[in-house]
Length: 209
Image (tube, rainbow, N blue to C red; front, side):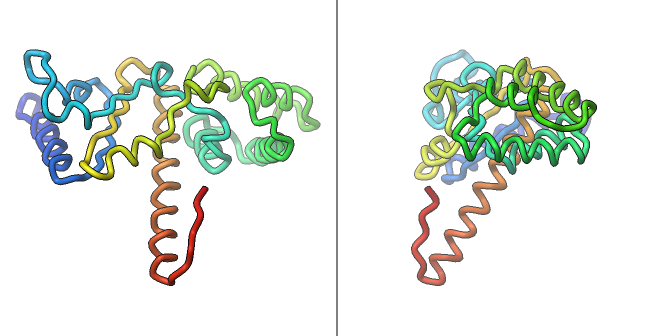
């Protein structure tokens, strides 16, 4: 539809109706159009307020490397940061090396890349992506300021709710990083839910940690 024909208004109505029916909605909000869904037109709290969760990357939405896990990080490296295949294989080795030693932290990742025995071009490629991750301010080593998406999903399970990722003030590259993270975590979560459902059908006990 053309600009001004009500596309965004219709989308917001659909989101609120889905929430009313107990659904969980995830919104990648490029222009900050959905961040006020929990308010009336005059800025007051509405009945959806407690079910609307607005996350802003670098502010109230940060994650640790261990939260991200290798599967999601490789998606970020490949699709958001265009890391070549050869460098991705070395990154996988570095990640596993750090994880086995309990050293999966931002500083340790940088130091491991610096001292890794590999082609200089590969090391340079890894370093440039590492600094992009570092300067995105999306990653942290402080668990106290990290956001657990799974916890938010649990909050929206009973009564429905919306998780809005406000990308309106995020740079193009950082936006791609966050989007790949969200998509990767959703894929991971849905896979766990599917596995749990299948296991329940088989009468198996499943501990997802």
